[in-house]
Length: 494
Image (cartoon, rainbow, N blue to C red; front, side, top):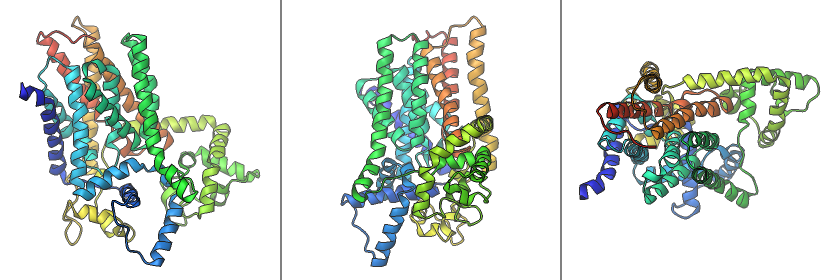
């Protein structure tokens, strides 16, 4: 009785251990440029509340810090203080292995829960097989060991599916815990909130297809809406604090402006608008290529950079004029922009490989700017890169990931479609309706994620590889349900 009581916890622990083993097998936890922003943000908040002693700075350093903070207010709204506190608190308590462990636990928990509620008549230790498959065959462990909030896009979608489809198979305490995890998963990145806003509508369709009673539909969707609102509030608290203490609002870089320019229609419209007397601040940059959104936003090279080379006043104007520029582009070239956006969606959907989490950390250790940030000490605490910084590269290459994870993703899609379509064409017991509904919801989340990220920000492998592991996961569940019924066990009721 005692072992059965503790079995779900032991399965989650064992699942997290499996994920950690794969991370260790390929190297160690990794960082990204944005990791420094999150870490610095967490440290700033810890200092503000007195948990960390403020650094002993010279007058010149204090003055420079104020300038940096002032300029940072033009671009830090896209950084989540929630993840900053999470990252800084765990990393400073130990190192990035602790961050990876906690992220692994927060992945293994909903995976094990989904197995338990979707396949109640199968052995619950089978959840470890599911975790092992996604850990060994998908990008999941590389994002679990990545000091970034990306892994929580998939976690959020998985938890939302549980709360929508299986709430009455989950105990009250666990439902509350999963709801808290969902709020956290959404709060760590704005794109996760945008994804879930769309998934509320998808979830409504799924519940109606299951013929769930109308009051229950409203109640379950209300839970999702409440988590979105709470995540939005949590995400905005830091910005409110900054405005109260400095009088300056936190702002985002002009992401949509950069996207439309890079897509092409924005450049066409800009040339037309500048030639006909429109007073866009962008007109002073119209002779630059403006063909790469990363260069537009982040480059400090005079030939290609825009935002990072601009002073505070110019940045503010670029951001204030973004809405007018976007609407102007859409009115001037709606068809061309629609084609470009759909192309970005398709490209994003096909990017199922790992790149940023396996980049060579030597860059952060040798670059004149990055070697002065928080990243080198974080790397040093989990890996000895050697005197030439060549000893801590990942054992996975981007090329290998493209071949390996691409093949797994295609196989998983084939298994999902094959299982669902074949069952409709043969005289076999139907798959559990709720498992089919959860599958539809999670596959839709993968597709919607590609739209949110590809259309609004641009197609980058990190945005899709972070969530594509959901497809092999549901493939495993469908195969297990198929075998369960073939072995003569009764199907789970809806």
